[in-house]
Image (cartoon, rainbow, N blue to C red; front, side, top):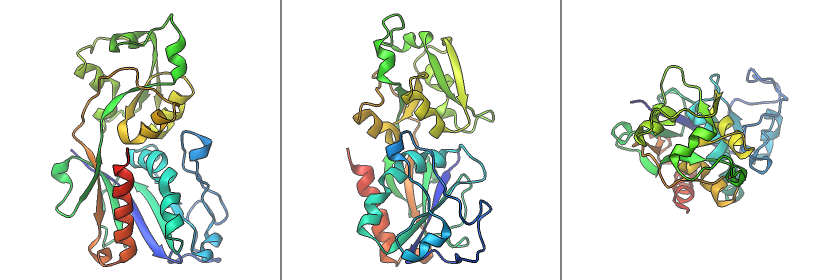
Length: 271
């Protein structure tokens, strides 16, 4: 079992080390960055370093290895909600770095990590944010085709399955093979498959009606509530993993860090 984590740096007024003259990230000083999101309303345009002087901007970095679990958490859960925190904390910049490596927060000068993994590896100072269940989701458009029913798991044979491309098998809980085995229909053969290198790519494909995806409860909850996705079956799998916030020792006494963790817990607790 392993952890992946989203690393967070909260800075009062300005991200340190950034200036008009550099040094710049490898993407360049004036590029506008985007984290993929399922719909345009959930897309946040990133600001260039020159915008940081206002003290109200958000620095966000994607990792050198795209498509990992923390990218999807950042894109589908954190960023759509982040305006709620920055609205009430206008003097705090949040610098987000989606990484799959579990690093030493104090050594790397980081404040908070959002880690995803089993409780046994969470650590004594970890704050549990929310659990996760995995279940099929799709566009409601797929339910309208009577020639391709989708009333029970066996009906997946009529549909294209949207698959997470994980050749090394690091994320088995995101594999259709695992879910079908849990449902005792491991020999099911779908009408087709589409594979994606990142989970945050799978969800927009599901919304567009390209097939059936495995939804991760925290990341698709809002999309189901809005009607952009539906869960055609009651069946779900519990991968025994959850999201945890971990604060570095050097940041424990900072009020803005404590407030950010409280905000994370409040958002995670919303139904």
